[in-house]
Amino acid sequence: MTHASQLQLRQTLVNVAMGRQPADLVIRNGRWVSVQTGEIIPGTSIAIAAGHIAYVGDDASHCIGEKTQVIEAAGRYLVPGLLDGHMHIESGMVTVTEFVRAVAPRGVTGLFVDPHEIANVFGLPGVRLMVDEAAVQPIHVWVQMPSCVPSAPGLETPGAAIGPEEVAEAMTWDGIIGLGEMMNFPGVAAADEKMLAEIAATHAAGKTVGGHYASPELGLAFHGYVAGGAEDDHEGTRLEDAIARARQGMRPMLRYGSAWHDVASQVGAILEKGLDPRRFILCTDDSHAATIAYEGHMDRVLRHALDQGLDPMTALQMMTINTAEHFGLSREMGMIAPGRWADIVITSDLRHFQAEVVVAKGQVIARDGQLVVELPSYPYPEWATHSVHLGRQLTAQDFRLEAPAGASRVIAHVIGVIENQAPTRHLRMEVAPQDGEIKVDLSRDLAKIALVERHKGTGGVTVGLVHGFGFTEKCAIATTVAHDSHHMIVVGTDEALMAQAANQLAATQGGQVVIKDGEVIGLVELPIAGLMSNERAEIVAEKAGAVLAGFRACGCTLNNANMQLSLLALVVIPELRISDKGLVDVSRFEFIPPLEAV
Image (tube, rainbow, N blue to C red; front, side):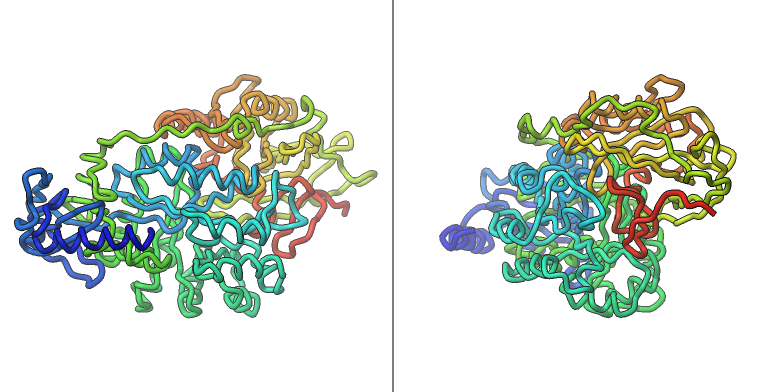
């Protein structure tokens, strides 16, 4: 905001507060949830002008003119709009606009978005797409510049790359709030110049650096990482993780997304150890379309946090004022107070939170769970909808797993899926070669996993084994949502069906598909970067629901199995992952063979 526009805004707010100018909107007789003081103050009225709060007090009648809209709160709670401090739009499989359509009626008025996924496909132009779409939304959508593209240099090949020069350029853009999660924690601890240059460019711009320390080790590597400049972290899964991060000056972000449930295991830092909750933030990280369409977003997180024992005021602080302060935005949002954007949710019950009226940027945007404003249309360019390039038709032969020559006994390095958690296990299982190759073994829950290169059309396929999906049928499942490089992951119990699934997604230009006995039984098309659809969240959720039903039809009972699948190429989270370059032991950041002769 320019000096002139800031001056004009302040003049307007002062004049409205003094009664010299009528407000645009007045909310009367509510219970003010003052997160800045930890109080709930009854009999409060709020006057709003130019999208901002001008007055908060017991009587705003002096601010009401002939054209002032008046809302009677009738004793209901007046809550600051909910903020999600760390999340990925692409995980919802919808565009920014459709994500906003789904979550704004639930009381979410601010999102801090890391478009790391589209950056891995398109680089800086992909980030620009997200920034431009975010700018026209009726709620606040701040973008963090992705930091690690690729997430682990040398271990994977993304569709594009980002470095310090791109980060420095993005820091000059309106709408960029800071640096996205710094996932290359070994690089930071080793004082890698590229990683530290990205952090330095962010700090030089006066912006916030997001963290991502995905390791249980809290020794010198952790201390080196913190010294590198990361200011928050959402990768903690244990009580000691939350405590260590808070003590070292970071803000622990406790996440409750569709598949990552890390609030319960860490909230004891506040409830049992007595740490100051004002250092903690609640976020989602990754939310599936079905979650945001049917269960909620930050309102869902709030209800869950209360179930863990947090009191409503503390939980609300962790998703409003704490978040705003962390990003240097407390002058603009995060509390109901003069000068801030008028982002206010009216609700009758804090413990069973349901947004009844949502005000964002000074206008009523939703009532009783329904949007009452039109959202802008944002057309994606053609290049953004054609990103799946296999180079050729794949066949069953591409998914063979050759046994070591002459070996009668073989040890397989197997990716072990852990339900509801991002880490995997590195399993070592003895397998028996058959005709010179290793087959699936349903009796031991051993299925094939493959990583298909899809950015450059090289035709490359990496094959390994996975345990934990529980498949019992002849099936294959493929996805182009494959964090972080977003090639194509295929799992299955039949090589021919795995080839069919991969070729199907090449034809639809991305998405997720389930094939059982040669028939497509679940398909969600994601043509934008192979990650997103421009259909509404409930439509995408229905299609994704068919994919989840397909998992179950194949024998899999995992919660959000498609999100678990999407992380099996994430080569920055221990223990074992697959990339286009091979099988990666993330604990050592080394390639290992999928099979070894004994």
